Image 1 (cartoon, rainbow, N blue to C red):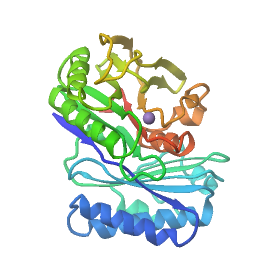
Image 2: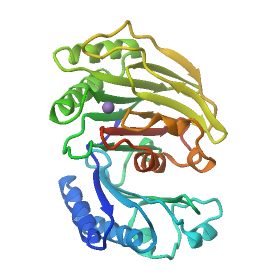
Image 3: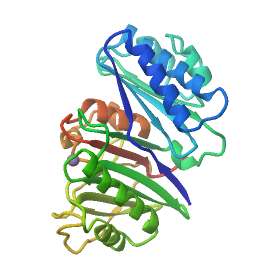
Amino acid sequence: MTRTVAGPTAVVRIDHSSAIQLAADVARSCAEQCELPGAMPDQAAVLASELASNLDKHAMGGVLYVQQLSLGAGLEILTADRGPGMHDLQRCLTDGYTTTGTLGVGLGAVSRIATELTIRTEAGTGTLVSARLTLPGRPRLARNTGFLCLPAEGERECGDTGAIVENDNIRTAFVVDGLGHGPQAAEVAQLALRAFHAASHQPLPQLMTVLHRALRHSRGAAVGLLRLHADHAQYCGIGNVRTLAFSSRGVDHRLTGQPGIVGWKMPNPKAHSIPLAPGTTAVLHSDGINAQWAHAPSHFMLRLPPPLLAAALAHGHRSSRDDATVLCVQAHQES
Ligand SMILES: [Mn+2]
């Protein structure tokens, strides 16, 4: 079984050149907290510094996110901005996407240091970057997964969290949104996360019942569960965690939970089955992401790889008054 879990994401707004040093410090201390060995904390600082100075020089509304990827497996730095988009980059990338290569435009050091680098840019929309520093032997699942977990403005802890686990090629994704925000909501989210890991192999309605019992004495939560099989998915949700499945052609499924509160007032949980076409991406997000984004997503959004889609939703479609968690996963892994 493999697990991909990450804690709250650190956010650095690049609104002044002094934020470049801050970004480097945040990345270094995240790498140290993850106990990444050798030169990796220095490399993390260089990655953050290069990406932040790029935002400072070329972009508007730039934000840099730093987070642990999964226990001991690495660190991810994401950036998002509101344009103008990198014209040079767009020209040199034939399909708008690369994991290697010589990028120029100040990203040379980033492409040399990062072990996984994903970039998308669109003139007028902006640029999204995921630069990862990973240790060898990381599960393939992690490459096709994007995750961000942002506390509400003014809070240090996040009342949402999420995880994805893989058992015999079947993946189960989970997002929990503890009622309200702050430390008490964070406690609910962590209780739910532990219960999820202990029972993630169970059929979804039973798993939801396990979560309900685990949260019995808490303030309660909304939960979304999605299990991805080869050609279909099962969904089970209670409350306001949104789940979508889409391909580059458009949104195929929009799923909302049954009314209720896990741990408090839960109806009999039901699982629904949906077909999964090849190329499907699934997204689960808490209500800190405005659900409007899925009404008419652009061609650019629909084609983003999971890490960049998570960053785009957190950056462009967030309500700052609530915790926001988004988990994106590609339904069919590339072999
Ligand atoms: Mn919420």
